[in-house]
Length: 138
Image (cartoon, rainbow, N blue to C red; front, side, top):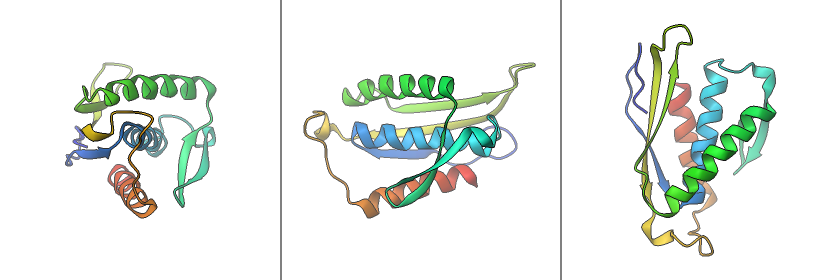
């Protein structure tokens, strides 16, 4: 998650099937938008997933936009043609990059077929999501 600005950090690596990577990315984006105050806190709700409490937007336009982005991303992930996802937070006034988040993708090439997803244990998924969220909130 190499962020530009005042703090520089290592990249976040997302590993697994297209479904898992897309889900991790979605939760990561929601967390960034919440943690950085880009959308008001009241437009987020807590959800339980994998035994964790995660924040997701309730803003209809943002939900629709993010769903479209994640669905397109899944198509690319199924084909293993995406290696990196970058999220940039920039100033409205002058386009200055305030933060830059880089998600490196390690696609599971053996799990390309949507009808045959690879299973990860709930503990592994929890640990990986926690790691992603922890890096974002650091």
